[in-house]
Length: 328
Image (tube, rainbow, N blue to C red):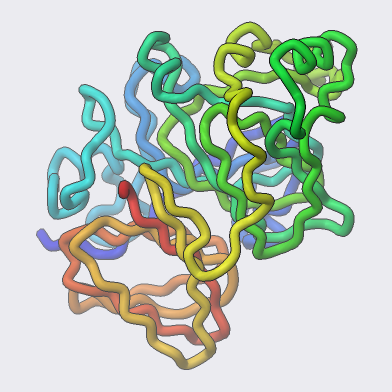
C-alpha cells in the first residue's frame, strides 16, 4: 500500500493563556474555551502526556489510511515513512512535534532541559524548539535569553523579588520573524502572538515566573519549578541572535526549517528520500504525489513520507509554507 501526503486531525489544548486565533486566523473549527495549542503532528508513548496509559499519537484525517495513528504508521511502514531518520527512545517515537500556539496572554517565563539533564532525570525529555511568527498584534513582544551580565546569583535574586522580566531580553516581533530556542534558554511567548512551533518531541517545561497570575480553574497560582529550572538554564550561553532571516530559518541537530513562498500559478518540486513536514501559513493549492492529488490551505500541516519520489506543490493563490526537515 503506497503512502501519500498525510494530513492529521489536530489535538486542541485549552490553556488559561489561550485565545481563538487558531480559528479566526488559521480557519480551524475550535471547541469552546480558550484554546492555546493545536497539536498538528505528535507521537507520545504511554505516561508522557496527561499520564495517559495509551499512546497519544496523531490520527490520519483522510485517505485510505484515515483513522490510523502516526505511531501505527511508524510501525507498519518503517523506512518508507521515516527514511533514515532515527526514532526516539526504546518505544520508537516519531522524532518531531509540530504545533500552532495562540498566546492571548503572556506564557510563563520558562526553560526546557538539555540532553545531559534529561539523561540524569528519566522523567524529563530534551526540548529544543523554534517559533515562526504567523501573526502578531501591534506592540507584541517575546522574551528570549538572559541579558548580558546576568549571573546565576543575580537571576535567583530576580526570581525572589519578582523582577525576572527585567533580566531577560524583550524582543518586538512581527509576522515572518523566526526564533530558535535551544534547551537552556530562558524564554516566554508574549501576548498577541500566533506562532508555528517546531520542536523535539517533549512536553517537559519548567516554569520560572508566571506574572503572579491565578489559575481560574483552581483559584491558585500555577506551580513553579524554580529548582529544576535553575539546573537547566545555560548561564554561559551568549545572547542568542534576535531573529532568523533568509529562506533557511533554523538549522540545528534535530531539525531544519526553510521558508518557501510561491506565487499563484507556480509549481514547487519537493524532492523526497526523507520525511518532511509542510506547515501552510498562507494561501491554498494542490499537492501532486504518488499519482494522486490532494489540497492544502492555510493552517494545514502535512507529512510527506520518505518513500515518495517527489511531491509537486501547485499554488492556486499566493502561498507561504514552512518546510521542516527532521534531523541533521
